[in-house]
Length: 498
Image (cartoon, rainbow, N blue to C red):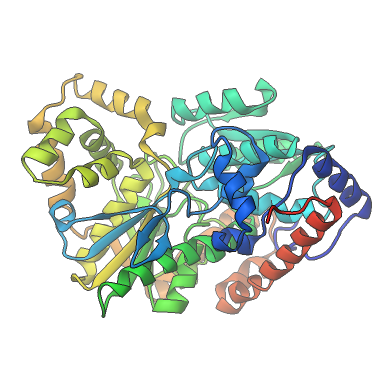
C-alpha cells in the first residue's frame, strides 16, 4: 500500500457492501473529521449518548468522544479543551505556557486514539479495509497501538498491537485486557528508540494478506487529523485566552517528534497566527539535532528516524530534553514529598499541583521544551506557548517506582528542591536549534535512509514532501474523507440522534 495514495473513492464495492452490513449489525455510526474538529456540530442527542457511554469500554458511542473537548472548560464564555496553564513560579519564564490535556480521550486516556481512528476510517469507508477479514496492525511505541486496538474492538475486527517490549507495564496491562487474542500483542526488541525493529516486524506480518498495516509514521491521515482537529482545538483555546488579554501572541506550538502527527497542528497554527513550530526530542537520542542516536525513557516518542509525515521544512525549532529531567520531574510531581515541597516551599496553588501530577513523561518533556523555547526566544508575558500532554501520569506509575528505586527508595524535600531547581528554574536554552534553510534540508535528508533505502518509498515521492504545496494539497482530502463517511453512514441506515 503506497502511503501517498490517499483514499478518495470506493475501491471495492463488494468489501464496501460487507462493511455496511457489518456496521449495521453492530449499530455503528461514524463521526466525520469535521465533527471531531468541532464537536458542537455533532447533533445534541448523539453528544448526549457519547457522554453517557462508559469511557473505559469499547462502546460505539465513544467514537463521538474521540476529540479534544471532553471535560471541556469555559474561558471568556467559550467552550475550550481541558488545559492547564503553568505559572512563572513553576516555569521560571514570563511567557504563558498552556498545556492541552490528552488524558480525557476515551478508552486509552491518550490522544493517539484520535490518530488511530483517522488512519482507519478512510480505509474502512472506501472498501480498502475489510473488517470481516482483515486484522488491523498498529505499529507503535505504546499509545497509538492501544488506540488502534480500542477502535478495532468497537468495529468488531481484530487489532494487533506491535510495540517494543521495554515499554511501561501499564501499556501491556491495558493491552492484555483489550485484545481478543494474546497473540495480538507483538513485542519487538528495545524501547523508544527501536522503531526500525517495529517496521521489520510489520514487514514480516505484511506477507500475510489478512494483515493490514496502519503505520502511524507514514499514514498521512494521522497528519491531517492533527492539522484539522488538534490545530482547531488549540486555535479555539488561544482565541478564548486572547479575549482576556488583548495583544496576546501565539508564539510557539510544541510537540514531541513521535510519529510527527501532532506536529501537524502546528502547520494550521502557523497559517493562522504565525506560530513557530517546535519539535521536542530527547537529547539521549538527538536525531534531528545532531544526526545522533541512542536510548531514552521519554515514552511516547519513537525516534532514531524522521517520520514520513513530518513536515520538516515547515518546522522552526528543535528542542532537546533529557530523560533524566522528565524522570526526576515525574517523581517530583507524582510524590507526596514533591507535592508538599511545591505547595509549602514554592507556594504553588493546589489546582496547578494537581495538573502537574497528571502529566505523563512526554507531556513533561513538552513543557520543558516550551520553557527552553521561551528562554531561547526571550518571550514575555504577552506570548503564549501552546503544547499538549499526550497522555496522563497513570500510565507511568511503574516507571516512577523504578526511578525511585534507583534513588534508594528515599525521596524527600531535599530531592524535590534539587529537581525543581535543576530542571525547572535552572533550565537553560541548551540543545535548542533554530532551523534555517540548510538545517531543514539536512533534517529532511535524514529521512531518505528510512523511507527510500529501507521502506521502498520512491525518491520522487519522498522528495516532493520538501515543498509546502504538497502538504497544502493533502488537505484537499479532508472533505473527501467526510463525504465518504457520510455515504457509509447513509448506507448503514442508522441516523445520528438529533
